[in-house]
Image 1 (cartoon, rainbow, N blue to C red):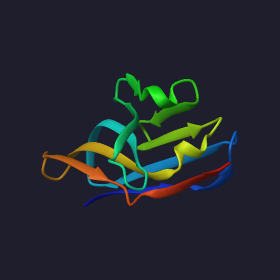
Image 2: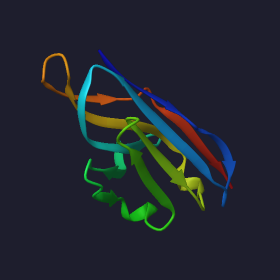
Image 3: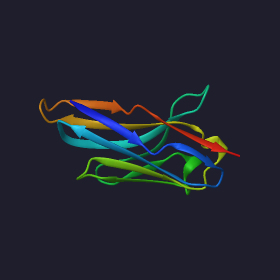
Image 4: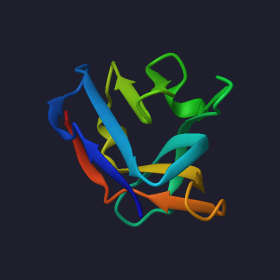
Length: 121
C-alpha cells in the first residue's frame, strides 16, 4: 500500500558531498515525521536527522553544521544534503517515515531499503 524508495548513495572522497532522496508513494493520507538513520558495520542504527510535517528539525550532534534535511510535503519526499563528508559517515543510510494510511486511517511506520554511502579518506 505504501512504500519508500531511496536514491543517491555512492562513493565519495572525504570533504565531498552527496544528496540522498527518499520518495513515499501509495495510499497516503498524511505523513508525520520523516527522517534518515544510518548503520555502520558492527554498530547500531542511529538517527542522523529528522523533520516533522511542521518543519521541526533534529540532527545528531555528529552531523550538525554538515548535513541538511529538507522535505516537500506536497511530493512526499525528504532529502538529506551531506557536505564535508568524513570517513566515519560511511554507513547504510535508511529513510524512515510515519504515515497515516489513506484507505484505513491507520498509523504505519516504514523503512526504506537502505542506500550505501562510502566516504574514502
